[in-house]
Length: 125
Image (cartoon, rainbow, N blue to C red):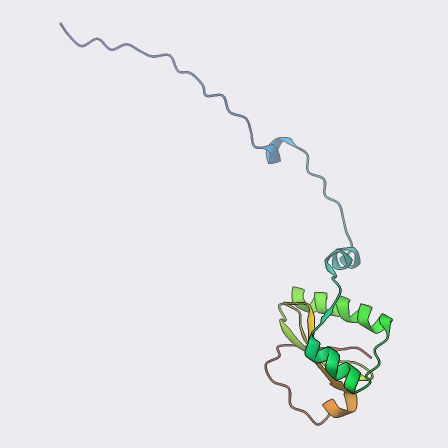
């Protein structure tokens, strides 16, 4: 006997479209400031930096710390990992990667120093 070919009916597979095609996405416009504030974390101060701040009696106001937090977040977004921060009364070496102050010195003391292993500078006056 000859081979008999039986034609099988085509069954369309049940397919659910991905959620991103069916659900309407909400695009909420957020300002850069709002986005930045959501990322801002408190700055950690290393033991070494804390000792130097105390020993040198460096005064940094709460508003300056808040501004430093924001500037560190901005610098991190730009790819800066280690930065020199120049303030009115202080110069700080910070790690944006760890969101920490590594060391501190008086601003006038910083004017005669060479800083290495940094890839950005933040000036806060």
